[in-house]
Image (cartoon, rainbow, N blue to C red; front, top):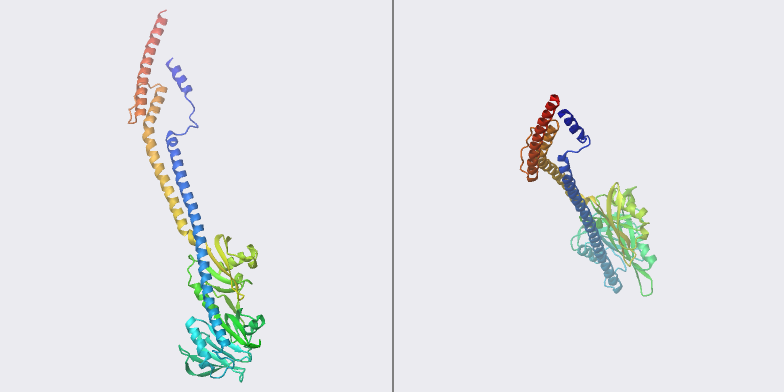
Amino acid sequence: MHFRFQMAMLKARPSLARSVPLQWILVFPFVVQIFAAVGLLGYLSFRNGQAVVNTLVTQLLSEVNSRIEEQVDSRLAVIRKVQEMNVRAIQAGTLDVSKISPTSFKTTGKVFWNQIKTFDLTYIAYANADKEFIGAGYFYGAPEIAWLTRANRIDFYAIVPDDVGNPQGKITVQTGGGIDFFTDWYHNPISAGKTVWGGVYRWPTEPKQIAIHLGTPIYSNTKQLRGVAGMDISLSQINDFLRNLKIGQTGRTFIMERSGKLVATSSTQPSYKIFKEKAEQLLATESSDPLIQSAANHLVSDVGGLQTVKTTRQLSYISQGQRKFLIVTPYQDKYGLDWLIVTVVPEADFMAQINQNTQNTILLCLGALGVAIALGLLTSRWITKPILRLSAASQAIASGKLDQEVEVGNVDEVGILAQSFNQMASQLKQSFTALEESNEALEHRVEQR
């Protein structure tokens, strides 16, 4: 009878093959919540950081391009003003250049040289209708006042001036070697009939030097050509200014013509190449600087061509797996200058701190997850330990060991359950004892009958 009851109790037990430990049930939800909260916080922090970076980069690029535009315009405005001043002086007769003589360096040459020093210019020149020439500035980086007279069409005469234009040493002779000195810088303003920028060109007497030239034709009252006043600014001066700009960590800015040829860049790489001992402009797409090259390629191929850029445009593109921010601003003036000012900066220059913060967030997330798991396991163990004792005691009772008593824990609910279990076990034991005594008495009566 007692054996049959134990078998019935064992058969009534549910299968535990697919059950989950209570300890993990208590720990898992909290771990998931903490991980989700920290992960969501990290993601939102990263996205907000990206949005802030996009805004700051847009503002930075706009400010950089505006500053470049202002500086370029200010620099070119000086050239235009000095040119206008010289043209007025020649027309008024206060600057007599009707004939260039071997002593013109003492008058006109001095005036030009002091303008060079005062306004930090590259070269100022004048050539009359007889193709006599007087100029002052920097040649091969060295100061000079040079002139060419009608009497000698081949050789230039030059002196090295001091700060105020007085000659230092003797007059030297620079042999032209048959070079046609009167090229586009002289002919373009005459053809246009007005003040024009001659674009980027090589100096005929120094083929490794490239500059931009502003020329103004000067006419008599009878509309007869008197000569051409001109001013040069070396591209190296614009390069030097751009190289002093700090644009992020690796950002670049450059100026190019609508043809795509570079005028100046902030890169240490040259904006021109030397081919057969002559300086030639580089296409921006051929630049040895990868950032400039990628920006130019994007403008040429993806934007629709350089001629379509009419207003300031802010763009972004992907190159070599990295995002780049780009801004392009047209620069034009009434004398025919038509340039594009471009600034480009990699997103990585501004995302370094955000990426570091993201890594820190991930580490904090993992740390919080580890702490949550550890605390959850300790807490669940503290809670489940008395429950496990109850489980073991109940299994013992189910196997027939009715003499069980469970220790009452510190958790109120579990303590009440333990007390109830102990009372149930005591009552069950009494019931089994009474049942056995009744069974024995029944068997005894049966034997007697």
